[in-house]
Length: 350
Image 1: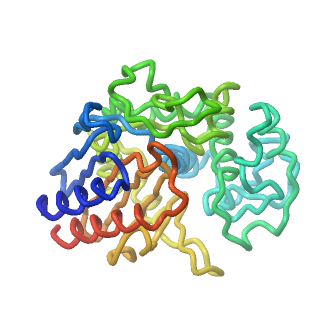
Image 2: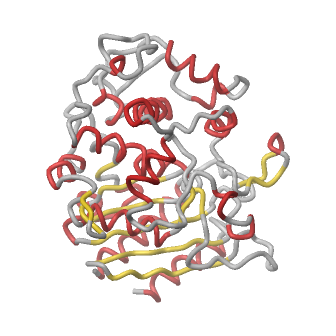
């Protein structure tokens, strides 16, 4: 299996899909991690290692944002049917929007893309989201957007009394010994340990050790860590998290979520769409997950990262890459084909 993975990844590097990546998988507690390539296309740049730290982009929406919210639902502090305004009184659509609409990305507000707000301050971005009116009744249209994740992170902060990074560390990352997972990478690592994402002129050049997602970057500068992006991690750490899910919410002598919640999390929540989503997770996406997609719970990120969990095979796969270097590509099929091919190799052999 390692030879097949190496052949496919080296082909991707030659085709400049990304300058390097890490592929890791776990089966019944046995970890395998393979690093490839370099941080950049410069032959003298840092070689990727097993513990190279990547900006995992929208993987953050699931790990830890949605999972943090699910812990409150699991402990009956929050319910799926609760109105969002119960936790965020300043949210103006008081009567219709429920917690379940955030977790299933079925909230359709007049502001859909936070990337349209890059000229605004952090406070202005949050205010615009909270005051935005509904375009369609919640629960009637699937709309993948940072907005739902930002609101999820805000609920976590309101319920826990902690910022999302602190709650996630205390509840998940610390107990799971995910020691290289953080929202504050430059407090822990040198830049030389963190894989760069992109050359961005308005951010003074190379983005390395700061979140790539632009609206999240602005929100963080204003002190808001709300969970649409911003997590930095390694393949090994993310595999620990997936192993906890594979073990029905239990690992390292601690229960993080009930078996019932893990099962519900991975069940399709939509009955009106060809899109399949669980609670805070993507399901059955062949374009990204390959031929075993009907078995897979997962989440991908714009930078090139993806997490896939296959409960049927009691296994999971993590691919970390910086396909945005030196500039983000205009198409997605090249990275999707790599993800599909590697998933097909791993899940066929396990």
